[in-house]
Image (cartoon, rainbow, N blue to C red; front, side, top):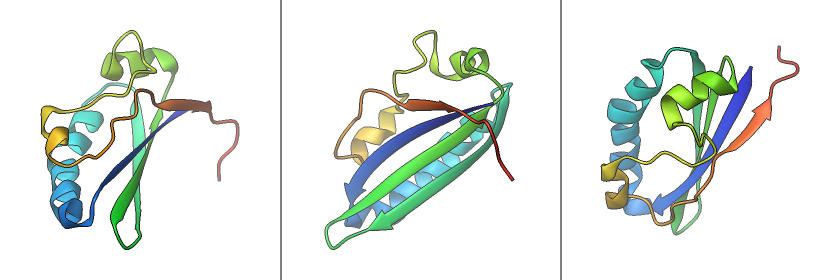
Length: 101
């Protein structure tokens, strides 16, 4: 299995709205992709920003391509992301899962 990790950042004022957007739009999109296993959407805040880390788990790199495209390392964004995100990291990071409990 492969973990795909993406990080993002938004203004604190957009925190709740971005969470709602991700739950309504992105999570169902991931879930409909064959080979998707699970996800964890993490957040933390400071006095100015909300930071997100999205960890998705997939059966293989090949099934990630079904979601992200042939160049699977490129981060996938939705048109609505421009309303929330401050930065747009170009790539997602991938790790082979060699143990879990």
